Image (cartoon, rainbow, N blue to C red; front, side):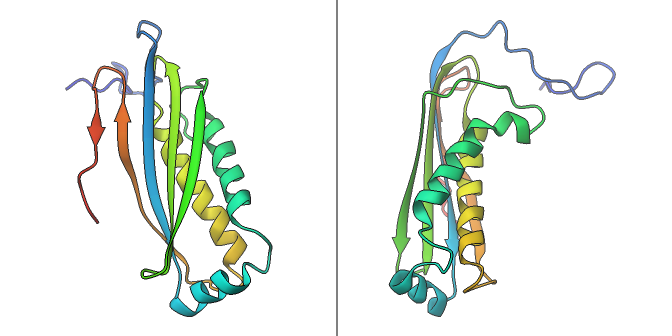
Length: 160
């Protein structure tokens, strides 16, 4: 298998996507933010001492997806058509589950943008809640789905 990120001198390089055709591309990612039971219950009853967490985390995740190429050196700067971030409160596991979906009509995929959106949204939740629980754990960051492009459809069947 040829690695496109390394040139003949074994130096890193950005992949040339100029000959690839635009296609509708979608990627979805997931991660969860786990709390201690007592702090999760406190958060659900009283909210964060720093204020409402979900809209702020959603906004930071959207901004992060848009700036992925500035954070990860070999990512391409692409126009994003849509970025969605949704949350689910898992009362049994004391977690906030984060799902992101990113769409584009471009010549490269949006997997890294979806993963970046989830991770930065999770870090924002951590920042907003660390006053009540410093042992918060961000876990299970993973790509759930991707479509478009040469490699076709990927569905993550792994369960953690």
